[in-house]
View 1 (cartoon, protein in one colour):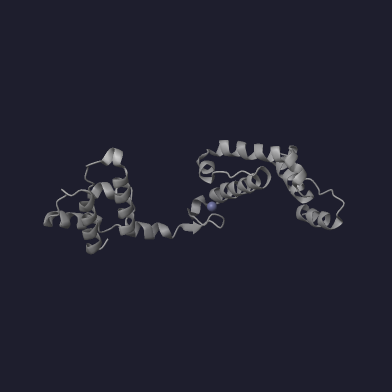
View 2 (view 1 turned 180 degrees about the vertical axis):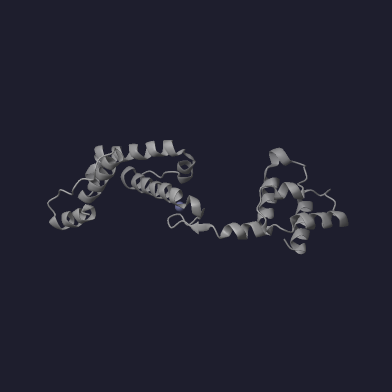
Length: 196
Ligand SMILES: [Zn+2]
């Protein structure tokens, strides 16, 4: 944060807590502590502090409280190198976590699409992210099974039915089936995928 940014932050605190004293020492100390951090991050923490009227009514925030759990500007730059953007959700993801993230992210995307298309329901992505791997897997395959056996299967194209059936059977440890519909064109193409 620049000096000016710290100064206006102090003024902001005074706007909410009129008895908050801005002395020379206060200014110097806050500047020293806040300098390594990004203004945006600290201001966000301050807003959260004031918004939490239940706990913070009448209380003053302090510089160390506001920077707790925040990454310093230089730390953010350093970790920035190891981040990649997920192609699906556009969120930055740590490189080492990417495969795992992508797997869950694409499955969530699939579930949401299915829910909207066949069940006319909007799923909560945040809630799906909160699930443990085990719970998510269970939910995911349950939906796939329902989709395969329920009435929704009538709305699917042969190709969709085929890939679903294949996904389910490989999930259960089976081998991928060969594509068996009369349309020779697709059949030919799909078979090609599994002919090594
Ligand atoms: Zn993603």
